[in-house]
Image (cartoon, rainbow, N blue to C red):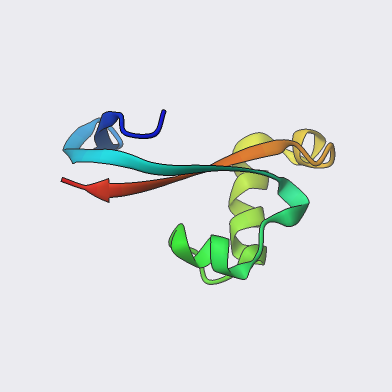
Length: 74
Protein backbone atom coordinates (compact mmCIF):
# COMPACT_ATOMS: atom_id res chain seq x y z
CA UNK A 1 0.00 0.00 0.00
CA UNK A 2 1.07 3.62 -0.48
CA UNK A 3 3.65 4.64 2.11
CA UNK A 4 4.84 1.08 2.70
CA UNK A 5 8.60 0.45 2.72
CA UNK A 6 9.55 -2.60 0.68
CA UNK A 7 12.70 -4.59 -0.09
CA UNK A 8 13.90 -4.49 -3.70
CA UNK A 9 15.39 -7.66 -5.23
CA UNK A 10 17.10 -8.42 -8.51
CA UNK A 11 16.72 -12.17 -8.80
CA UNK A 12 17.69 -13.45 -5.35
CA UNK A 13 19.98 -10.51 -4.51
CA UNK A 14 18.63 -7.75 -2.26
CA UNK A 15 19.55 -4.44 -3.89
CA UNK A 16 17.84 -1.91 -1.64
CA UNK A 17 14.68 -0.53 -0.12
CA UNK A 18 11.99 1.74 -1.49
CA UNK A 19 8.82 3.47 -0.43
CA UNK A 20 5.65 3.00 -2.47
CA UNK A 21 4.57 6.45 -3.66
CA UNK A 22 1.60 5.64 -5.88
CA UNK A 23 -0.33 2.66 -7.27
CA UNK A 24 -2.24 2.81 -10.55
CA UNK A 25 -4.69 0.18 -11.80
CA UNK A 26 -5.12 -0.14 -15.57
CA UNK A 27 -6.25 -2.69 -18.11
CA UNK A 28 -3.37 -4.15 -20.09
CA UNK A 29 -4.77 -2.48 -23.22
CA UNK A 30 -4.37 0.93 -21.52
CA UNK A 31 -0.62 0.54 -21.01
CA UNK A 32 1.22 2.96 -23.29
CA UNK A 33 4.78 3.64 -24.42
CA UNK A 34 5.39 6.00 -21.49
CA UNK A 35 4.36 3.32 -18.97
CA UNK A 36 6.68 0.85 -20.70
CA UNK A 37 9.64 3.27 -20.73
CA UNK A 38 9.25 4.00 -17.03
CA UNK A 39 9.55 0.24 -16.48
CA UNK A 40 12.77 0.07 -18.52
CA UNK A 41 11.41 -1.05 -21.90
CA UNK A 42 11.84 0.76 -25.24
CA UNK A 43 8.12 0.82 -25.90
CA UNK A 44 4.79 -0.90 -25.28
CA UNK A 45 5.54 -3.60 -27.86
CA UNK A 46 8.72 -4.66 -26.08
CA UNK A 47 6.90 -4.75 -22.73
CA UNK A 48 4.08 -6.87 -24.16
CA UNK A 49 6.58 -9.33 -25.66
CA UNK A 50 8.15 -9.81 -22.23
CA UNK A 51 4.77 -10.17 -20.50
CA UNK A 52 3.78 -12.72 -23.16
CA UNK A 53 6.98 -14.67 -22.48
CA UNK A 54 6.26 -14.69 -18.73
CA UNK A 55 2.47 -15.17 -18.65
CA UNK A 56 1.51 -16.47 -22.10
CA UNK A 57 -0.95 -15.26 -24.70
CA UNK A 58 -3.91 -16.97 -23.05
CA UNK A 59 -3.67 -14.72 -19.98
CA UNK A 60 -2.83 -11.55 -21.89
CA UNK A 61 -5.65 -12.03 -24.40
CA UNK A 62 -8.13 -11.53 -21.54
CA UNK A 63 -6.96 -7.90 -21.12
CA UNK A 64 -6.26 -8.33 -17.39
CA UNK A 65 -6.07 -5.55 -14.84
CA UNK A 66 -2.48 -4.65 -14.04
CA UNK A 67 -1.00 -2.56 -11.28
CA UNK A 68 1.70 0.03 -11.88
CA UNK A 69 3.57 0.63 -8.65
CA UNK A 70 5.63 3.82 -8.40
CA UNK A 71 8.58 3.62 -5.98
CA UNK A 72 11.10 6.01 -4.52
CA UNK A 73 14.40 4.38 -3.63
CA UNK A 74 15.60 5.00 -0.08
